[in-house]
Image (tube, rainbow, N blue to C red; front, top):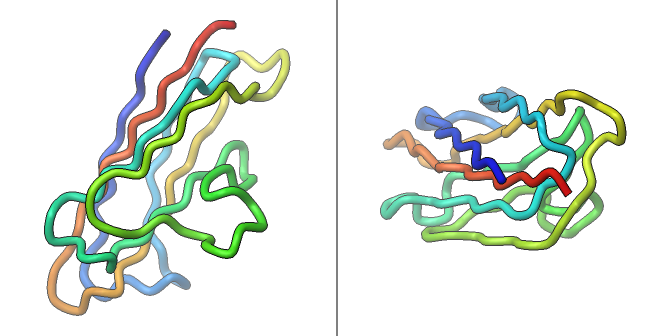
Amino acid sequence: MAQYAASLTIPASTLESNKVETTLVVHEPFISGYEVFFPPGCAGLAYVAIFVNGKQFAPADGSADRYFHGEGSKLWTGKIRLTPGATETIITVYGYNDDDTYSHTPIISINTDLA
């Protein structure tokens, strides 16, 4: 099992149409869980979505909420198979910020597994 983590600093007044991103490259074939942590002060104004190889992964594609937001953690566990046969998978985290005064830095952790 491996754990990958990234922080995504989102400047104040970052529009969804001009969202920021960070990328993780994972080498294991399964995601076994993830966590999105919104530090105190985010007040539901910072938004984050996770994509795997260009397709929205979390929140689930097609869900009413296209982005996580809040204050505290959003946690998911359960095994998801990534691209079969791939030696690496690109995970991109996108974010925007409705706060007109403060930047916010959500932290994303992804756990992977070999089987």
